Image (tube, rainbow, N blue to C red):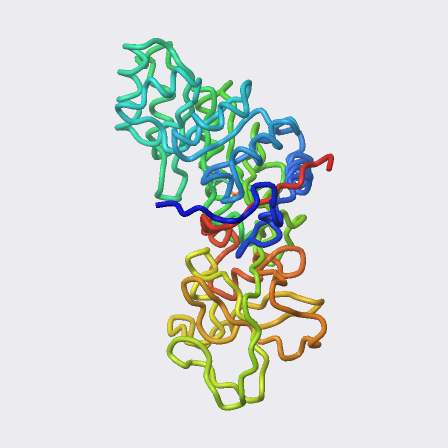
Length: 390
Ligand SMILES: *Cc1c(COP(=O)(O)O)cnc(C)c1O
């Protein structure tokens, strides 16, 4: 039952963003700049935008719209439903669905003009039956050149390309493969995948080709083919090991809900895994692993990370401040003893990652990668988008 209250209806209080427990700022201008930089680095190849998993956790509607307005006309999503959603924001784009098509999805593909990326022989046979029944429709072919994840094995793809009995109506609009070690430029496996893909490309002469995601673009022009598929680099993550990311796109912040003094010798958080070695000031923020601030980012007490990274840092008042003890579901504790008392108070925000704490540094502290921190961002985040012309 709703009680009558004495709050005035015109008292709108503060902007939600200014009081949110956790908040995310997405710089769409930086996203567009990064995507354009990857397009520039793709040379003569066209450049698609990869927006699977809700645009790497940053929001399909806003990111998809910004990339479309920036000129992207080829998009990749993982699941058909993502393609249906994207179609609203990218009316004239070609939208590829990386998981391909399954029975029951035919109508969604045809009505929204989505292109299934055929991932297996089983799916290819199904697709043939779909086009025989519903009419020609574009598709793409994924070729496995060594990943052992999705795609027709290269030799079978070549046999299929050369099979004169295959229906004339079946002409893929794209033949693609995916590198497993593009982030390690020194790996000889990149070249063996390249050579395998070159043989497939030759067999499908005249059909546009695509091999490289963000990392592969940095391997050089041989790897570009007709279409590149950058994702993480556009979102401000590291694409290649040891190479700095482009512009940061996402800033995640958590609000300080309590600042407390804790005596030397006392312990912090679950399991008492951190004992304070000095009288300390601790800031408790309202973000935890339920928000995707992973438990593995804890300052201590994560057995699987034993001997590894020391845990994550936040940023406030021009200083890096360490996470102390375990990250909990809704709360995380930072040691702010070294922040002058007049520069920090309850209600302030600690940056979890963004312009001052690189996404991938935060990820490494938790034994993971930027991709995972972005796609783990929880539902409680209040989001603010900065548009390119703001
Ligand atoms: C996710 C994905 C991409 C984009 O990869 P990034 O490393 O984020 O650039 C490209 N192609 C395929 C097949 C993918 O699954």
